Image (cartoon, rainbow, N blue to C red; front, side):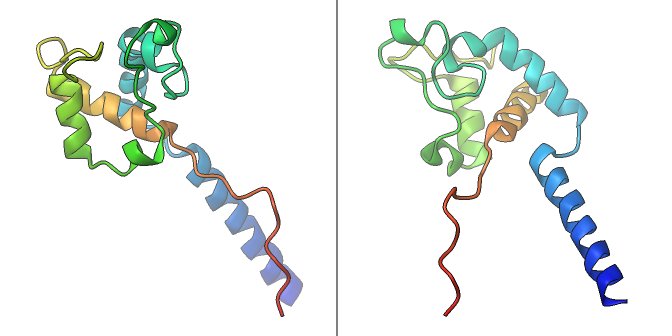
Length: 127
């Protein structure tokens, strides 16, 4: 009986881990991906690391959208950057080109790029 319960709990954990990794598909996420690919990919790169095709030619370089510093910013702060751009950089203001809904969709997609992984080294043995 305990083996069945353990198996069931393991299966539930595996399913919840997979869902946390991939996340549910949402309409805004698909829209955000499409906009990102059209307007952001060349500078920020496929994974949002600031390593797009145009990045080597820009000064300052495009921001790393998956960095700890960017991840720590609030949605409000990031939406402000999307809307108003960054002065003295290649980051344009999108408020006149994208609706607020589209700006939120892009932010949703950018947030989905952030992946937290477990450390490669195993934890120390318990005492």
